[in-house]
Image (cartoon, helix red, strand yellow):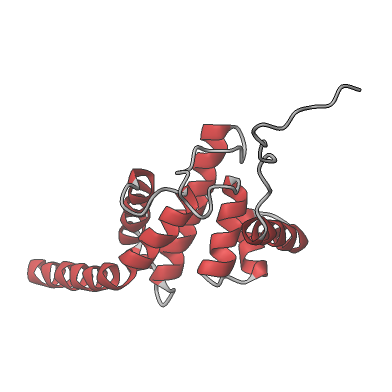
Length: 167
């Protein structure tokens, strides 16, 4: 009986190691996009990934045919959303890395954009995961995409040596 348990534990560990070897890189990239940190300096993303993988390992035996990547991604997204909500009073603005492509977006916009465009999650699934209407997810995704494609202009440049005529 003890040998059987050890054998099952070893098989479980091998299966999970194989899963991590294949999925950790993509999950870390998704977490880095969510946190809008630099690729080489992403402690929040790494912490999100560690929690997500730990949760996936804890429920590994109960997956029963469910996609472990989808479970890990779901936990990653909900943990990010919860942290953003508690840390910044709703989905307020975090302090993303200024060099991040997604730095101009609010956490909710980043979350929806990453799930929809980077991860390829359907609008309906994203809406169900976040508890939002599908139309709201579509609107937020469209607005975030527009912000990235057409960033707001900065202030007009000042012209040196220009004199103002008296009125």
